[in-house]
Amino acid sequence: MNSSYYYPYQVKPYSTTDHFKFGINNFKNAIDLAVLVFFYNLIINIPAYFAFLQLFHGFHLSVKFTFPWTFPTLSNLYDYPESVSPFLLTFTYPSILTIIVSRFMLTILGIWALSFIIFTILESAFMGVIYSRIFSSEKIGFFDSVNKYFIRFVLFKLIIMLISLPYLIIFFVMPSIFHYFPSGFYFLAILTPIAFLLVSYLFFLTPYIIVSDDKPLAKALSMSASYTLTSHTFSYVIVFVIFTAITSVIISALMHIPIVGFIISLGIVSYIGTAFVISTFNFYEDLKRRMPFETVTV
Image (cartoon, rainbow, N blue to C red; front, top):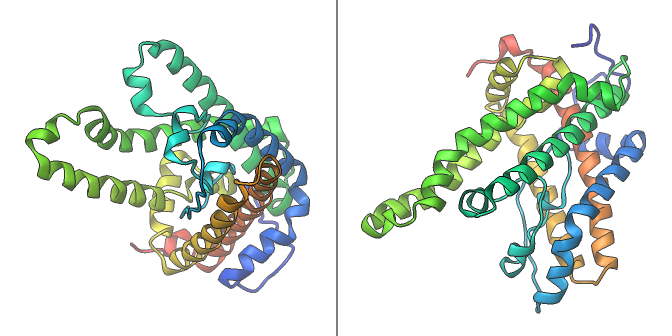
């Protein structure tokens, strides 16, 4: 954690919408990072997008509700139609089912591990550089950010995966048990998304706390769980979800315009995604000033 918080723009507390204005206004300080986001998303989405153009006929208008992210991806704001999903190449969250049942398990696990590492490197650098440029008097670069935050980011993602894994295994890998216990199927069909939703919400601030306060992972998890139960955080997330849901509808319409719509959609993801990471950092810094962690009671 920096010895003094560099807060050059505003002294009074922010309103909820002020955080988003702050992110948009300070996007200019992270244009190069948005370019990185654009090309990353271009590379990982080309196979799925061309499959989408070839296989999907009709109009697929959708809305997606998303909690604050760390490194923006198209999947934050858009899901391809189900008919395209077998062709979807994603470096962020590969299918657990595919990894388990494929006869090329080792190859897929290797690809998953490599893509997981690449994404986490980009994620830790992206978060660290944004915070350094806009919120800190201590400037650190891409590789210094990776060196400082990578291990904690990896451990955080693995913990979230382990928390979710029992539900995924029961729900996807052992469906035959539900033939004998149909009520159990419906119970888990409701429980699983609720569990994902709860875990995602409680710990979404963890990477921001790691970068902002340089806290150990266990402490960052505890702080995130405490802060996310406050009304300030709930209000911010509600506005975030509304803004991103509107954006997701626009992107789902644009994706039907061959090539041009795809490029514009990636541009929106890069712009909004980067600006909203800045917004969430600003929200957390303001939250700390309003409610020091020691005063937060759960």
